[in-house]
Length: 239
Image (cartoon, rainbow, N blue to C red; front, side):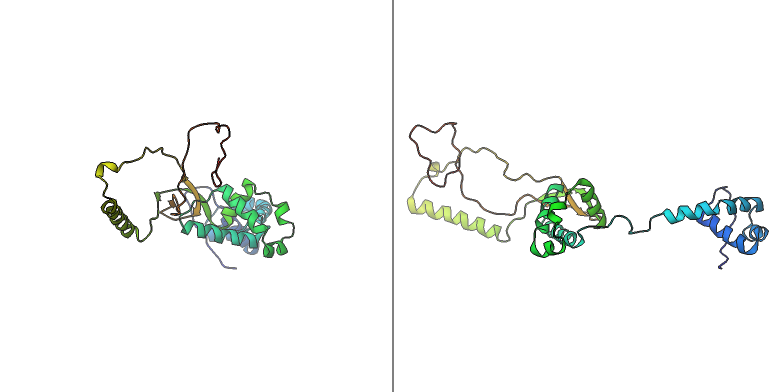
């Protein structure tokens, strides 16, 4: 046995691990020898020996690093983690609801269903599962540190081309500058970027994009609640 010395301390309390070292030494070499070796009080070592069985039981009950409840769908969770990382690389926010929906989607994939035949039926997607999943993959719920919209690389070129396009139209049709006007606009939120996202722990910058740059068709919003009698809604118009 290695004769590891506990050493003299000014305080009167010792760690259980240190006490057990002294107890094992005393069981082999005797209580008085342990007292001389560790420069401790012999009666105190005697009390430690009597309590050592309880300390051993407590140590066996302690969990080791990485122990605890294991994942039921480890392969599916691996895919989920990779998906989350891909979303974060794009700057997209990932919340609890999105994670649960994506997990359901993964469990319905043919390759995953072969591993977990009843996974999509048994999976609950509870808050407890999300917290355990995030702990297993070292994830945390983070507040954004920066919000931005990623512009296309050729933004400047497109702006310049649009300016020349307007100039050509004015020259072609010869309309006056006072014929150019700005229509009244009503601000509407089409994309509300969240403040929180699931992200890797330790990242100093948590980036969230507002949109992906997609362009949609023009939308006209008409005031009114009822359609005039006999009026037919044109095809393609959404009410």
